[in-house]
Image (tube, rainbow, N blue to C red; front, side, top):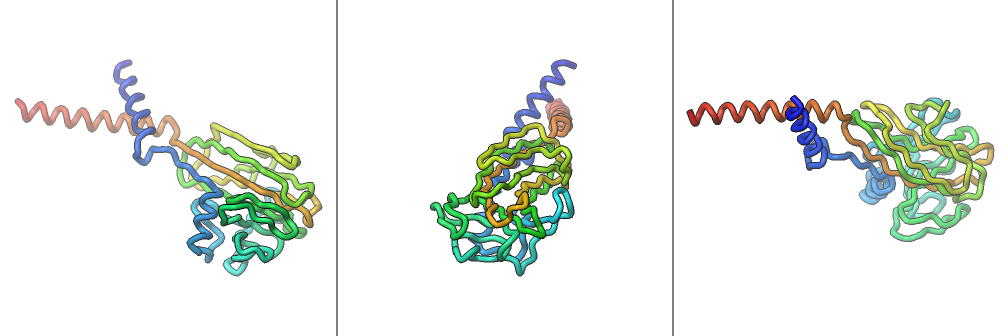
Length: 239
């Protein structure tokens, strides 16, 4: 029995590291956003597994930007593209160089910018899981407008307690072992903290997921079962 279990574990690990459907799912928000804007797919405020939006209350209803909210030139800069004519806004520097954005300052290449408003005080980048699994979340924030924002990361809109909260001008985050089911959400939020005039905030974020061990084990058992059937068939043929 121990030998069988060992074989299952080995097979599961092999599958997880292979190019099968059990290979890790990697979602780099910055790369996905830039690629989406570069090909001009701006009809819906969504790219890959991410959506751009806002809300009036932290943890409140998520409002996705409308098609008419898209801009190819945020605050007059053609390299800053995304959604939001003014505030709130979610945009990205699509160029391969630093862009000096009027009223904001330098924005690194590929950096996502979130800018909340007064009525809608939370600018949001939302990730929605399409696979049940165990996820890690890594990245960082940096203040661009010099304001006193509060940056959050919420799972399924739950604000108490948040996964992450920081009012620092520069902060990083790194989480592992976050269990997400299909359609669970992770929200990256910039809250204006009452200072929506100077609250542009940069974001870099990568989400990586793998199947839960139970899924790999079941897949491994199935693989061993199929291998056993094939072996018995070959034995019959030889006989």
